View: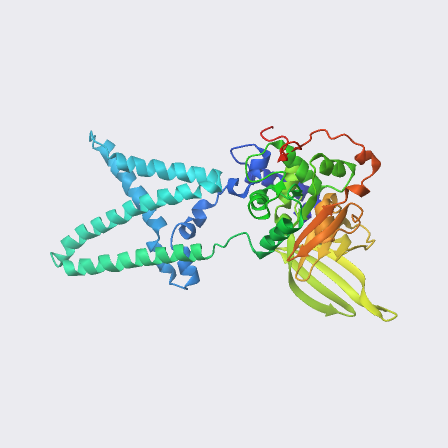
Length: 454
């Protein structure tokens, strides 16, 4: 992604790949950003693990040959046997066709197509694989019994032994895989969120409105007992696009009017929004472009001369941050800072470096007009178009430069809450007449403007 900001050809190629890979059946911009609505074109590659015993083999270090006892593989066997049976029915011109075979095949391919279109339909594929797998297992045992009867000539104790061993391997490994998968699922509502909600509940007025991204709306309603602009229910273009624009664009008069228009009392930013930034950007620009905040993890650190170098990696891409220790009087700190983006044999300097609440302009020539924000064990690349946006300023830079309009009232476990300072708004905003009032003062009821509109 970063290379696309440097090399035009790579940028065009990346845009084409993104457009192809993220195309889903619906063209609704908001829906296309929901994780459960993404495509799962590689479902056949991951199916043996997702719908079989792959998790158990990986976690418990079991022999890889046990994968043949996967439910998914028995499902494939069931599909083959059902298809052969249907083919033979037509080939031999038998009038009666077993409808169960047709049902198994149709259900599997409908579920597969649905899952490839929307990943949330994977539960339907799990049902289809379970049915086809059960059919394949029963048929396998049946054919094994017939073969054993001919070979063993009535000595059935060996056949029973084989059936028991196979059954134990099938059920134990697949059940263990399900246990491993389920045991790895944790509530997304962690202590950081819970503590923030309790603070909001105990320290704000019942009539206050809190601004956050729509994913977390129901949590605010249920735990914090406060109103939000949007939640997990369906919403049209407004106000979702306005919220996205607020977070992904610099604070301007439009931003302040937006807050006043929707009677926002508090603005919340959380680490989750780093990963969701691409979705917010896509909605803000209504699908015309997407800016993301890729996170590079610290992979190496070393010293070269008087400089300390920190290397951050994301796949084949690297960001190298270098500095030397500088002493002025009794104060020792970092100086001569530089940041370089490297991809293969190509590299380019990054002009701005963010550390804490400060942004350092390196003044590097021929540099990418972007910013890299340095954290303890990670570095975040911030594209030129969004390096001054509200989210970057409020979350990464801790509200630096926005103190006039936002007062930080909560900062714990990565969650930050700012109180909107309407008293400091410019007169042009204070005197601006609200276009779409969203509070019914008579009934003290919140009315999210624009729901259901496109």
